[in-house]
Amino acid sequence: MGSVHFSGIGGTAMVAGARLALEAGWEVRGSDAPLYPPASKMVEALGVPVAVGYKAANLDWQPDTVIIGNALSRGNPEVEAALSRRMRYISLPEWLKENVLRDRRPVAICGTHGKTTTTALTAHILNRGIPDTGYLIGGEALGFEHSARLGAADMPFVIEGDEYDTAFFDKRAKFLHYLPEIAVVTSLEFDHGDIYDDLPAIELAFQRMLRQIPQDGMLLLCADNHAVSLASHAFSRVETYGFDDNAQWRGEVRTDADGASHLAVWHGDAYWGEIVPPMAGHHNLSNTLAAVAVAAHLGMSQQTIAAAAADFPGVRRRMEVFLEYNGVTFVDDFAHHPTAIRETIAAAHMRWPGQPVRVVFEPRSNTTVTNRFQQQLTDAFLAADEVFLGPIHRKDAIPESERLDTDALVTALRKARVPAEAFDDVDTIATTVMDTMRPGDIVLIMSNGAFGGIYDCFRAQCR
Image 1 (cartoon, one colour):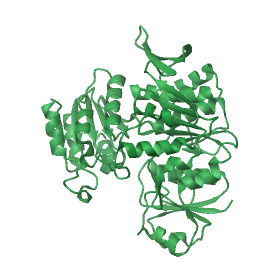
Image 2 (tube, one colour):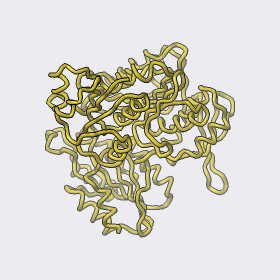
Image 3 (cartoon, helix red, strand yellow):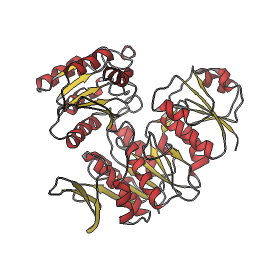
Image 4 (cartoon, one colour):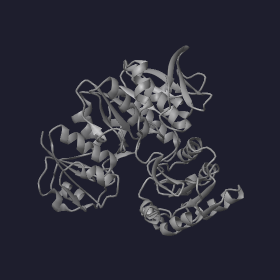
């Protein structure tokens, strides 16, 4: 097949792409800055040479292709070396398009929220009924040995369809490379303020993605949010899912006398069957409906789908309990958008009813570090029993006039009778939480990054 170097191999999609390249018979090497778990463990599991730090010398082995991650830009030593040496360089989405997706049946899971969980759940279900299904998951799915598998030609390939830009030399959304036969849109909201100016700009990217779906393909839209507005832009068959009365795949939560919940599902006017919800939270019930609809469309039986959904083990950093100490449960979640934060807090209350949910949040994403979400973040935290705000990631790089005002956020939450405090360092947050926690507390940590090592701080203090 040839040789390929992954510059930025620690990105969740990049390490998954490296796994696919290995399966396909490529010689693989890579490089990245120092990594933290789970990315570091996923890269280590590849068993390939990986250089720590970006250097022109990392490309001296003269690979046939250099795949440049979208976190890299001009000025990076490997980017400059690839350009000056006239090496063949390409983005990961373009490499996937030409080397994986063209001879498969891509199922692209897109949307502002829920992509990773829905991708993992859909892949989990399909592998139960269609064993040669391939996948690329933008996270660590607990039920799979790896986050990607090549699968077989002419079989479904489930891929997380990110709307973020492709590379420094290709500013189109990643999912425009994915050739979807089936596309799922879980939600449609403003995000990625560093890439998109407003919601209409994001909508346009999604509309362009729909133009790639063949007429005999399918677009599956969530009926409960703005995603359903895309229906008029489709050139393929359109179906909807959700809890709205007009959804074609409609869910209804039923509770038994013993308190156990079940997700009853209708397809059109016909009762389809029941699913034991694999995860807590209304948003995860919606994600489950999406996966059910895809699997049914691809011919799987209700019995096989229901059995597979019931034993889905989840995704790392999505409502993951990583520590229990003195009756206190520490939970890690990737939520960073206000809607995801609100839904994750609600899911925690659902999973641990009656227990205080104390939220520890890192403003880290390119949009939440700005004041674009100032009011939305206030609203998102209202259901928390207490809020601890960490330092703003790369605070000095954001002009003060554009930066999230954590002091104002604390004031607004306290006015709404939600105890809140902002901190300048991670060690103080961990110490404050530990000094004030009580048995039964749920400490819900939300960050889309390393949060300054706060997880190890809690582990260390709980010894």
